[in-house]
Image (cartoon, rainbow, N blue to C red; front, side):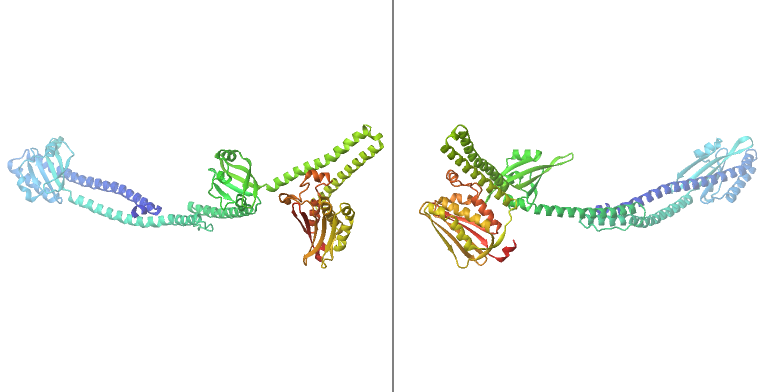
Length: 607
């Protein structure tokens, strides 16, 4: 397996390809070269033999021609002369030369050891063909001793082309093939040396190509691990050098882009973490992938990631699918151990080109206070409309009665006019109270503080209502601790608070009852003023809303008593403007105590 992995590297592949190409080229060159050398040597060897045969034919032709006409003795001398010529002039190493007469008998041979064949007929087919005046008779044979030999037979012609004999040459080709073997060995040695040098050069060449690629690979792996400061050396102006430049440029841009992306991600995370609304993002399958801290608080869960959005928001799957695809909003009611919340969830699908909806973002908005304010606004408008319509209806009715003739009856007309006057004053009080509250709501009500004696302020308030208390036979008492003295406050504002509280106390206290006005200092920094009556009291279920505008425990009775339902609301706003608090304690059919606490520090002078 390690060998297989080794051959997967570019360097080894380049070396193998390079060596194989050189090897193939050397083989092709070797085949061509050796074949050419072999053919050249063979042709040269054959040509030499033919030249020898032709020369011998020319020299032997007169002798052979003479044998046909000379007597027996002369023929013997002729044969001996031919033998001398063959042995002395045409001796070829490892070759036998035979001269044959026209009948195919051997007249002379160059081999002394083979003289026994003289006078015998040579049965070779080449000799037969030569005696038939056919030239270029040659062949290669391998004899019994496994020696390759070349045989050439040439006709010997004399005047007029008459064949008078033949020359027969058998030459060994051992020297030729020995030379070929030496050439092969030299070529193989040269090929091996060339391959060795080629391998070394291939390694060096492959190293120059693959080393920059290895550096690029290591740098790319480092970039993949998140180290974007990688820079590779540019070693030239070739393709690899330009690739290195492109890689360096890419890492620089990628580092910059990721830096910007990380900065934007931190900004987004900071925005999500500090949003007053909850944000939940879900993927295409509806599973939550991102949420912020506010979403966890609103949904009262520890984590959202991995939870189905429909389960998280407790919505039916069909509704959830429609909202994910088309968007929209849904009002949800969430109950916790501490309170009940109203959540408006707005769904926004995220679309991707050619892929449709890929994710959904849900914005969770706490609309509890908004709904309360809206409900209060509706109730306020309804109450104002009702409070104004009642006196207006009364005024209209009595005005119509006066117009119908009651004006002529003096006593009746005076009574009707008095009713109209009272209802008008009631509307004026209502409008004045509304304007007063409006100034507090818009922070336009400024306090005119001055150093005021609180005991004196309380005594004057009790004196203002003494007549009304005497009329209803109500006892009054003012209790002021010795530590209570002068404090900084808006005298007119606190007078209005006391008037509202004492007026309510007188209104709901029956004859023979008792009202106590108390001032004390709970600590060195505050002073508390209380108005306690012995009236009908307030049920516990109404205590939480008693300071709301237009709220009445007994609406019919309060309206008959001329109240607008704004007195305690105005008192609360005035006390708050002083930096104080106001609260109420009551027990049904026993009585009610309203207490407001004001700062008693000199620093309040600068408010």
